[in-house]
Length: 126
Image 1 (cartoon, rainbow, N blue to C red):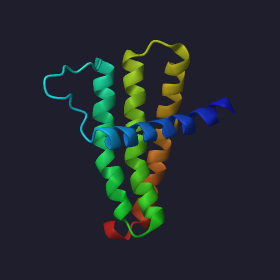
Image 2: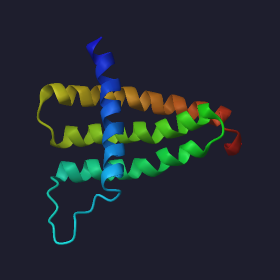
Image 3: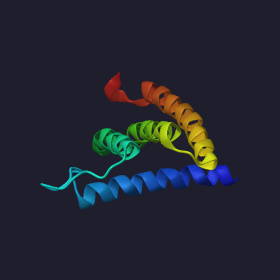
């Protein structure tokens, strides 16, 4: 049960982080003259969030809400997998590393399901 609660919480946190970053800064570049203080892991997290933002936002233009949801969730899940891979690369905490492994397994299965669903239901792709 704990595992089932953690994955949606992680996804919610990632979404909130992306929205907060976009709302506060629109660009994550440091101000002129300021040095970046991001760690290598932070830089990878930032790159992942930046890559997933545009395709997530593009999905809102779909007229079919089911297609919009799936097209938004695929890059979101890909981002979650990438962030989990980053924490496996840099993180040390055994509990978080286990969570990251579970996120990868769960999200990869859901990505496949959503891509298969889109292949059948996305009229624009046909």
